[in-house]
Length: 225
Image (cartoon, rainbow, N blue to C red; front, side):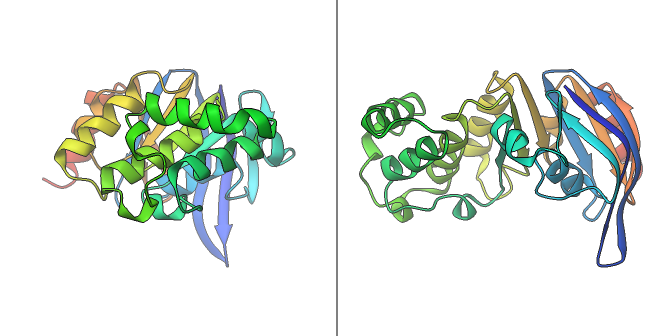
């Protein structure tokens, strides 16, 4: 479902990604690498948040650069900081906003929003001020707002960075448990990466390795031994 061909990204004259060629149809994809390696930039090309400077990226049969709207309908994106995604005062309002963007009729939005919150364990917090939720609950809300639109592909960019151990495990279970047809997880959590079907390792703006997660993680660890 994901295919990059000669993908390169330059921003303000700085080369961020270069020569990325990869084809991925595995359901769970881990993306690892040091800070500044290009992994988050790669993730952001998947729904058009970052445009290729050269080459192409296709997701779910969509050329992302040519049809950003279709790409953003097909590809949901979860940021590390849920505060970047929670836009309205209460969880139910925030989910309704996502449903509005998805074209769901007004009369159906509240019921569907409440159902989604209940499914994510947030039913009792539907009308609570979003700012008063715990860190884990905020990330659950951000994830619910993405998933309620039923994306085919979910990209999660360091989704557990701000979470404690318990919430890290909870979000990890959701992401690896079939949240979408294909889930791409950019992460420094190597335990989470190990639970995926394939791992990509970025280094200095290049895709350095693609393979079994255990093997890729061992190579990454060895670089810092």
